[in-house]
Image 1 (spheres, rainbow, N blue to C red):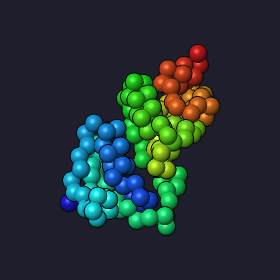
Image 2 (tube, one colour):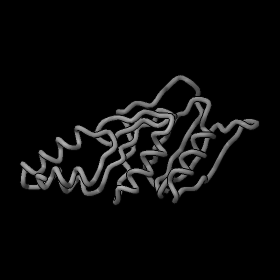
Image 3 (cartoon, rainbow, N blue to C red):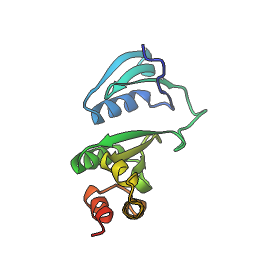
Image 4 (tube, one colour):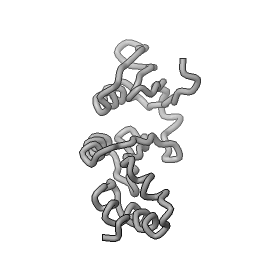
Amino acid sequence: MKKIKPFLWFNDNLGEAIDFYTSVFPNSKVEQISKNGEKVVSAAFQLEGQDFLALDGGPHFTFSPAVSFFVNCETQEEIDEFWEKLSTGGEAQRCGWLKDKFGLSWQIIPSVLGKFLQNADREKANRAMQAMLSMNKLDIKTLQEAFEGR
């Protein structure tokens, strides 16, 4: 058993949320669901090997961008796919962040961004940072061009 698992609190839509998230991430599975009649009230599930617990606890608490889930993407196609799916019905935000239709925040980030931003050449790193700050959905080609000074 993993020592730490995110625990998510939903408001009357946990069943829908689990169906949505397991359809977005290909390596996902539902491990346990508890129902009250037809309503899903709690669940354990995995997205890309990450364990989650969830409760349909009502309107007492909501999600905040202070906690987000970081999705590391290798290609622009991967960025585009996760961005489209997770932002549908939600809200696009700056620098690769978005809020999904349930209010949960995600960061859809190309793995190469860390290489750009942590580069010893601070001028290159700053150009990549400025390019990132101007975007909502991140574009690898534009970030690469900024990093290289093109």
